[in-house]
Length: 206
Image: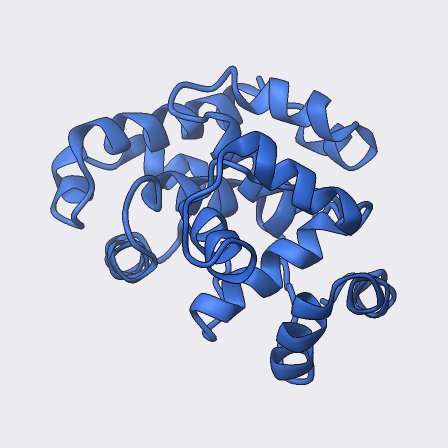
């Protein structure tokens, strides 16, 4: 389901930023952020996608789904680690997603409270799970909770898109990126999503 704020955010961003207006005009009619709604799957998929390309991440994830069609904490926690490694996951990522599954099974994550919690509160709770850092938590806030103003400054795709569109292809530091993004508040999630589209028209869904 498309977030209720999406069209308002697109209009606001297009009025403030001519480059975003061009990108939104190109991709806005056919695609928008959608949530799969499954908290565990979103987090597991984000772990699988850490530090690899979108294409490699999708390939590995599809192999995980083929090996575990009923993807849930019980299935992941109980599966032999060799099966997950055969899907292309590193030993560390296998450990991470199985630890995530155990957190869900033990009730150590307050999933039912996340919709009412602030962005930083959710990030702090998620970062207590082994293998989940700020980037993974931010992907969850974007793709599952659909928070409107997330700006994942450590995301390689976002870094590249901002360098291309706002600095003639030259890399910018985090402070400079945040300065550019200030005009996008409170819709930085939407700006990020369209900047991703400018590099890869195929939407990523976690």
